[in-house]
Amino acid sequence: AQSVAQPEDQVNVAEGNPLTVKCTYSVSGNPYLFWYVQYPNRGLQFLLKYITGDNLVKGSYGFEAEFNKSQTSFHLKKPSALVSDSALYFCAVSRGFSGGYNKLIFGAGTRLAVHP
Amino acid sequence: KAGVTQTPRYLIKTRGQQVTLSCSPISGHRSVSWYQQTPGQGLQFLFEYFSETQRNKGNFPGRFSGRQFSNSRSEMNVSTLELGDSALYLCASSLARGLERGHTGELFFGEGSRLTVL
Image 1 (spheres, rainbow over the protein chains, first blue to last red):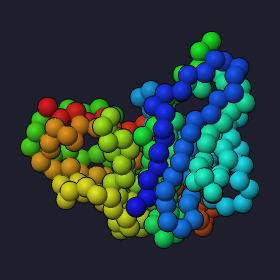
Image 2 (image 1 turned 60 degrees about the vertical axis):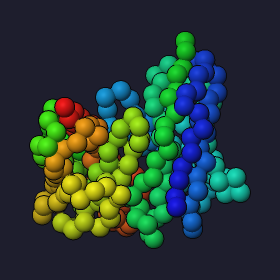
Image 3 (image 1 turned 180 degrees about the horizontal axis):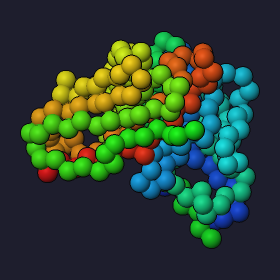
């Protein structure tokens, strides 16, 4: 069965410092990996994805993530955090063609708090 | 281009009632997926519709149903509401089901319909 783990409920970081939000996954076959962000009382916004190609993917708002097949991880990173980055971050996986690209399995979410 | 529109944004129902939620996808998007978000269970996939047909289904009881119209608008229905159905219901649209027609895997989410069951 597919699953996504986000081991940290909350990540605290000072503004200007680098941030990392962790994600590991379990899926048979080639994974399709995504990061979404949710602001209070809003829907989810797409940040970035890994489908194939370079393991380091760059996305919106200066975020990037590295696909590591051996460690089955897809950690989200940003070199310099902003207070406005404070939100709830979700890692998700799909099985692509075999399981449906649009059927996402989400992690539990990690709340990022960036302090001034 | 207008985003995904969900109506109503908030609603309150009592146990045993039924509810219908509506989703208008981004113009040109043909796939509509529904997700349930609760504090306890997180984000869970309900179903996906494409070309007016259900293409994928999550692990929810038959009380949860949906449909898609020829203009790609979708509705989901929950019958015989239970307290545990209280949740934020999110609709997401995409160009296609697979990586074709310009679809790159990204889903576009609406702001959700928050259902409270009393």
